[in-house]
Image (cartoon, rainbow, N blue to C red; front, side):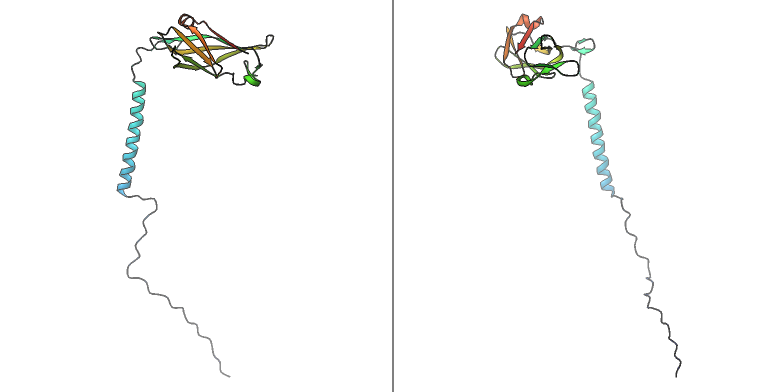
Length: 183
């Protein structure tokens, strides 16, 4: 019997390269051209914001009149004031005012108020404000205030929502004499 011992052979290992491999570019590094483009876009955007802010805040407001710190109607205009009462379908809105219900649900705080000139062209707009509910009468009364109505007309027409126009004289319009109702 012969005694044989297994011989171990080492696996073949490739030789080491003569020069190390080149490193891969680091992630996130950008070229100088891309950096300059980004910088330029940022500078233009910043200048636009600063310029827009300057323009907005530097306008000549010398003709502006304020009443209790709020802007008043521009010169040559007036604020049409009055009231509008909903006599049917008025309900408490749960927040201290009222609104319309049923076929009158288009009447609420924020409902459009449109002022027309004598020829029927829209000349000013606003919305119904400050409602008051009269539970006994079942009515809802809104304050109407439309600033910036141009003067010079013989009469004006006012429309609440899409409910038809109410005509009033220039004197009524300027003196706070608007009064309308629905229901």
